[in-house]
Amino acid sequence: MTAAGAVRAAVLIPLIDDDGHLSILLTKRTDHVEHHKGQISFPGGVIDARDDGVVAAALREANEEIGLDRSVIELLGEHDDLEIPTGFVVTPVVGVLRGMPDLVLNVDEVEESFAVPVSFLLDPENEEQGTREWRGQMHPVYSYEFGGHRIWGATAAMIRGLLRGAAGLGN
Image (cartoon, rainbow, N blue to C red):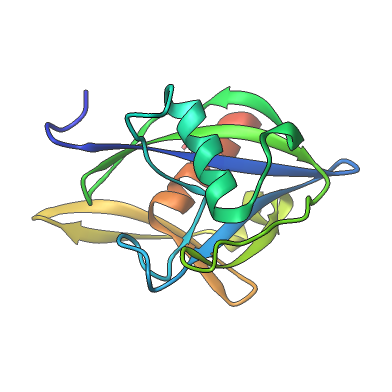
């Protein structure tokens, strides 16, 4: 059950399979976007009325933000919805890219893109856990530091949920 008034959104979690070496493609949002300025995220955004569901929204946003063409994505499916304290319910859509495609960043929305090896993200030494208060409630917050970037909040939670579930690690 989601909170009343929550905004529905979808993101694409692009897994890059480079000859058996898996990475996750991330973006750094510009300071010009409406929400989550300067944060590390997946390509994605609010589901529009023109979208035919979460998958269509995630693919549209990935194309708009980083020029990722649908034809290079092998869809694996949707992962669990994540309700975030800022009023969004986000559905991650997981897809595989065979190697790193040429990307065309929308400079109004995306400052840069980069890939993080899955092996780095699975190493417990690279994961930090803390808590953050939001509207009087404490929430667990996970983060990773990689290549001068802090990956935290909903993005880190989605990465953690996806990889721990895939690896059978539980919480």
